[in-house]
Length: 129
Image 1 (cartoon, rainbow, N blue to C red):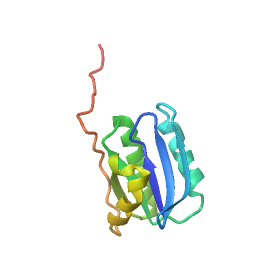
Image 2: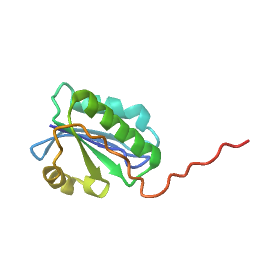
Image 3: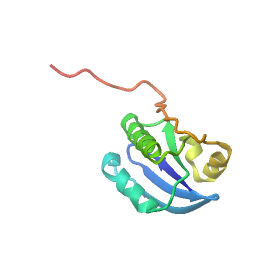
Image 4: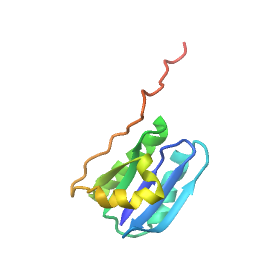
């Protein structure tokens, strides 16, 4: 079973449990800037006690903080469960494409962390004096 996580937009959280090209369970939210508050509870709601074989996560392009949160969560879960992470782009995360992408992308047996791809330089400003 594959846990799919998409936090590529500031108003999007998608969590799906996928097995044999079927979505067994899914949860999501369209609340603005709520990834840090809702992501883990949505994962828990979908995953339950089922055994995962991999985690797929959208790596970008997307919103800076939203991507970082989703990818950090996916990397931490995969590392702690000793399962691989599969990188999926935002364009590949559409339901019609997702099953084919997951079938064609092979996750190695070992954990290798995913790095965000923001699509542009992050807009980080200096602190005001």
